[in-house]
Image 1 (cartoon, rainbow, N blue to C red):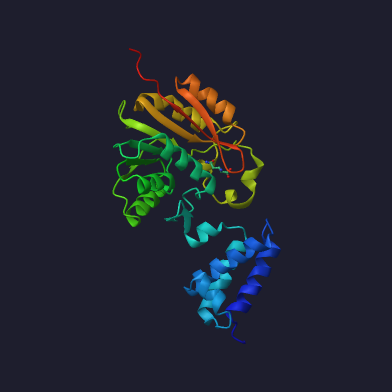
Image 2: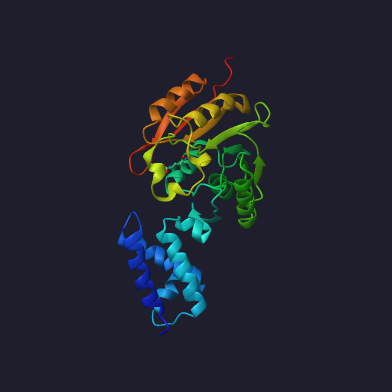
Length: 290
Ligand code: GLN
């Protein structure tokens, strides 16, 4: 068989992906094919584009074919590569964790704005998954301590590996069920991107969501079970004046604001993402009355 050049292999893969992926978008098929060819050959995307006439070794060709087949069957590109960038940081990702989403960068921005950059803030990230939010905050704020809490041992191991790889000495992974194990009034802040999809949401049967851990996505009939559980525990663990920021679905803002007020929080507000959707709600625990 005639050896294939990088350019030919790429072309063929783009056509395969565009024909078989559910979201048959040629632009994303091209990027996926380039990333997978980079993975199979150990070359950068730039090198692939600069030298399309280079030939593939038979082993690389076979490896590439396997990767393209996995992607064509719908497996998320982040799981195939084992990586995803979030807040400019390369994070290890595995099927035991949710894949970090760009939407979640809004929660990082809100947290950076809400709290003093130089104070020794202690902030818990609940259901940290890959550790994305905690890692972004630990990276931006060396004076803070991030307690990255995760119930799943598999995900916890990924978060711990990411903290090590990124040399974030101020990120402490902790295996626990939400705030159980955190003493009263220990935290200055709580952040979370909890599961918030409703049990029967049809999106669960599409795209990347089919491959992600259900426990990281789904939270009861209205998708709010996890947020209710967090808000049951949060007031006790936060110091007076402490801040909480929670990501939620675009249509859950009003209900999350109501739950925050019911839990005794004040200064309740909702922040919109770049698409204009309500995405993060935040609030403070009241200071004691004099
Ligand atoms: N934003 C994700 C989605 O809709 C859900 C993430 C989550 O449940 N925390 O795909």
